[in-house]
Length: 255
Image 1: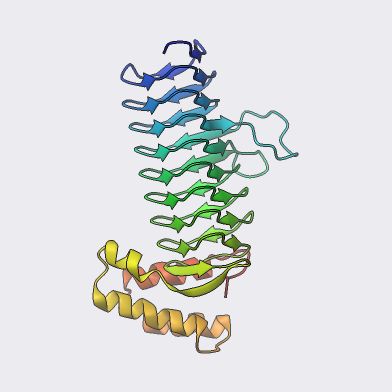
Image 2: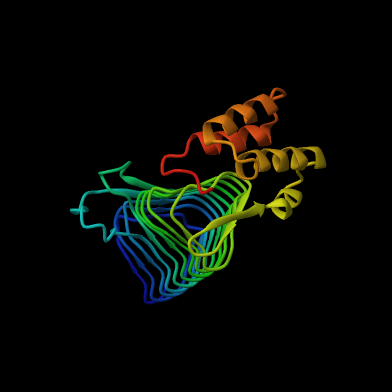
């Protein structure tokens, strides 16, 4: 903790390793086995679970620059075993939403990626360098954001979705769908991600058929959803996830 500034009210497990020149403010809780490399800033109210690693110059739990924010005691919650690489920024929530930004577990946030206020990020996601979320964005599980991906506020990215380099997302992305370009457009399924996560061949083929129903057959969205439900009479979990990600869309589907 040499040359670090730590508020006396911060609750820090004795196993936490803190490098030089870190700043830890009041209302911060840091769980076991976390590592803070040099020059990390953590502001509260922020609660961090076990096994997280913060690299130099990451700023965690900072006030949001949202102009509606007026100093309210909004919060940030972080799960376990996440990696925050150099220069990552994460902001707390606003009272206009749920007053909380939430990050799950086992995520990798590469250098200079950004999580804005009121975002909800699930588990086992990868944010490549300079990927950024605007406020109120929801990211599911096992999502990969390519470098310099930017996501508009209130958008949702479904489980196992994938974005290419320098993608601009302004509408919702369904589960398993791969998108790229500026503005983003669907370019297929994240079949590599599905294989890496041990989806069997029958399930992959079923999701391919569902993708064609949404994106290739020319059906209206309502008609396509009805056909997806008919296709899912056996209640395949992956297809259920795909359908749910479409039906939950609030900003409109990237199509």
